[in-house]
Length: 489
Image 1 (cartoon, helix red, strand yellow):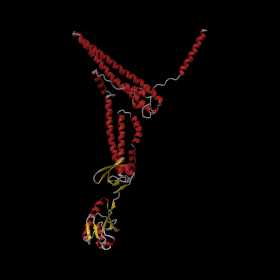
Image 2 (cartoon, one colour; image 1 turned 90 degrees about the vertical axis):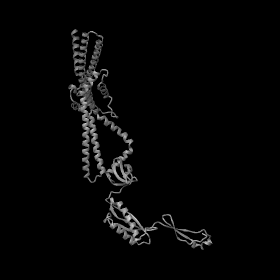
Image 3 (cartoon, one colour; image 1 turned 45 degrees about the horizontal axis):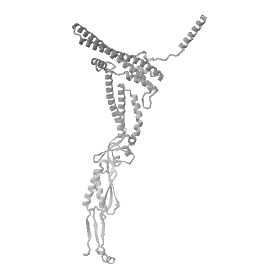
Image 4 (spheres, helix red, strand yellow; image 1 turned 120 degrees about the vertical axis):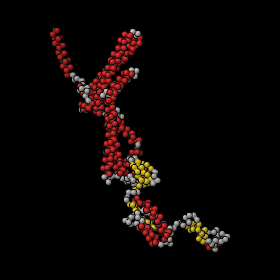
């Protein structure tokens, strides 16, 4: 019977052992085999892993981080014990009177301080190890975020937050302000350590070097793009400036992101926040976006360029500069007018200096009693002698209108655009002077006013000769042409 029971027990043991062997083992981290692996190598090692595999790696590095953190806090406890020992020895030294005993106590204090310094030095090394574990765990967590994603606000998911909270809890340096020696040793050790002050000094130097390099490259590319675009006649100066500025800003943006990465700043959440905030900004700046779109249309279709004289949105002046939002125009009286691009593109745009030549439209009137041929010859002579009037196209001088008080000529010479107002003013003055010399009148508007006395119907026929005719001149004086008025009137 005993043999049978013993056989059954052995059989059950063998069956249980086979099941235990067949039971799947929990996966373990593979990247923690070498704790000194570099961050770049670790990133490549975990790049192919899935989210579940990465969490296994994160747990493995979390264990190493806990061990490193425990060693740091153990040294802190040892430092506190040494501080208590030193305080007790100082108190004992103050109570002793014998010289030999006091000397022995001082030796013990010296030994305790040396042991404390050694512990603090070891603590600095352990902090560097802890920082390395934090960096490696952070590398794994960044890969996890890339694999499983983040929430709508760009924040990490709940599965990742416990690791982040633990890192925030055990990271950093805490100083004991009541112990000046410990504080100084901690700070000096951190400053001189490869993972502390020297590490951040190198990172800051990298940051500044990248920023300066980005500034240099952005200016170089911007100038090169501007010179290359100047050889394309189809592009306006506004478009060339816009492309050059965009290149400058894009290069600077990339440089800032790279520089932040050199400071161990994770730029992925920053980009996610910028993307999420873009929707809110788009709704808040609808008017600005409309100006932005209008600015693009102006740059592409080139209705005007920098230096052109334009009439837009009721403003006449010279285009000084333009952005995607507005156009700066300097008026003739030297006022700077900043006009939104939407107001320009949505209305009529008049480019005064678009062409190299312009026609000057002038009108001169002569009296009905003056000689038309004489007046035309005078104006033709004036235009032919003026040095700024172009010969081709030829000027046009024609009788255009028989007005109420004058016979009006149109006088239309062609000039270079820059000479428009010079010709207009000089020809107008010369015509007046020559008309005066030739005895040609330039009439002014006049009207005849007839004043009739208040007589009865029977007397009106007898008093027709008593009418007085006045001519009202433009300077508001009355010229009495005929005075045949009865004394009683």
